[in-house]
Amino acid sequence: MKKEKLVIRELQTPEEFRQTEAISRLAWQFNDLAISPVSDLIASTHSGGLTAGVFSGKQMLGFVHSLPRVNQGQPCQHSHLLAVHPKAQGKGLSIRLKLYQREWCLAHNIRLITWTYDPFFLKNARLNLGRLRATVRTFLPNFYGAMGGIYGELPTDRFEVAWRLLDPLVERAAQGEESAVVHEEEKLPVVTNPRSIPAAPRLAVTFPAGAPALYQTDPAGSIKERRRFARIVGPLLEKGYEVTGVTLLRKGPAYVFDLR
Ligand SMILES: CC(C)(COP(=O)(O)OP(=O)(O)OC[C@H]1O[C@@H](n2cnc3c(N)ncnc32)[C@H](O)[C@@H]1OP(=O)(O)O)[C@@H](O)C(=O)NCCC(=O)NCCS
Image (cartoon, rainbow, N blue to C red; front, top):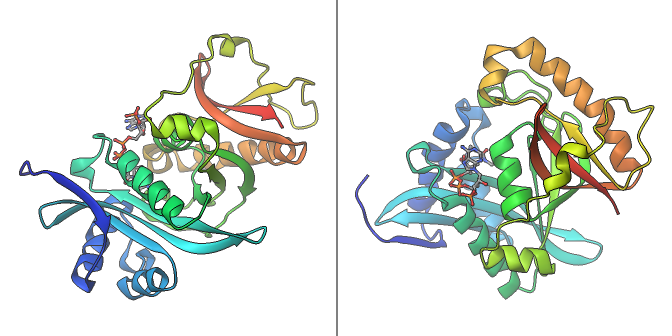
């Protein structure tokens, strides 16, 4: 890809919106019917949403799209799409897009952004919880129904993250601060049975490594893991725990749950 200065800005023309289709197709490997139509993106942007792209010259390398939402009487945005062209991934573009979205929201007096993601995606978990310092209090079972693409036939269970834009941790993360490494994590009680949740303020729940490739190589095992994870996470959130981080234990990747 040609080296040009990268610019992040709101999309301006239908042709620019059209470029989101190719990126979505590559990023999610969806069939055409599962790709958000340009007309929907334009209408929801017109109605108070944001669609911003990162450009190298005229070429879009990634985009973020959010819809207006109201939370407890306050305006917020629900971020529906974030995708980076596979050839441009791993270079920090998603972080730049999210930080642009944060600045845009603050300039519009919006202090909360929500979005959903597949809790088995370690990369997204690190981005959302580790790098951006969003947290999770809501679990949405089979949110979209089966979607295909990189999600295969798995139930589309989702974590809904809340990004409180003026939270001091979020402000520091926006300045580039790394999340603190918790060294005692190996000692965290790991919840394996929803009927015997240890009485501790901080707990861990493991999830399988290797998604989304795992969904294609071991669909049956992935579905089994999905069910196990859902059985544990639902009761934990109901008990007042919040997902605050993601870590790597000897057993594999795990979420950190803190009592609120
Ligand atoms: C998720 C996605 C948007 C990330 O975009 P990206 O530009 O490649 O990500 P970045 O380079 O900005 O990395 C963001 C963070 O993700 C994490 N990350 C990135 N690559 C990773 C990898 N291979 N393994 C683990 N974590 C990784 C890191 O925490 C990284 O932050 P750091 O560089 O400060 O450590 C991109 O992979 C994508 O388009 N995926 C498909 C669509 C999707 O899942 N969209 C979002 C959910 S709907």
